[in-house]
Image (cartoon, one colour):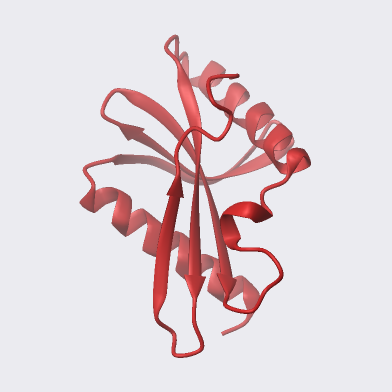
Length: 120
C-alpha cells in the first residue's frame, strides 16, 4: 500500500470509528478556504473538523505530532470558512486522529480533542 492508499485507508478507519462513537458524518475531503478538511462531523451538537494522520511505525514523529503550526492555521481557516458557509453560529472545534500502523499491519488510533483549545 503506498502512502496515498494508506492515508485513504486511515480516513475510512477513522470515519467508521466516529460512526461507532455516534458521530454524524457531514462531509469528507472538503477543499475550502485554501485548505482541506478530511472529515466534518457532528459530535452531539458540536461541529468538528477532523484531521486524520496515518503513519507507519518507525517514522520520525507520531501521527498526532505531525500536525504543525502551518497545518493548524490552514485547518482553522478552512474550518472557519466551512462553518460560515454552513451558517454555524455555535462553537466548533478541530480534532486530530492519529493512526499508527505497525509492521504486521496492526493499528492503533489516538484522538486529540480540540487541538486549538478554544482559540477558534
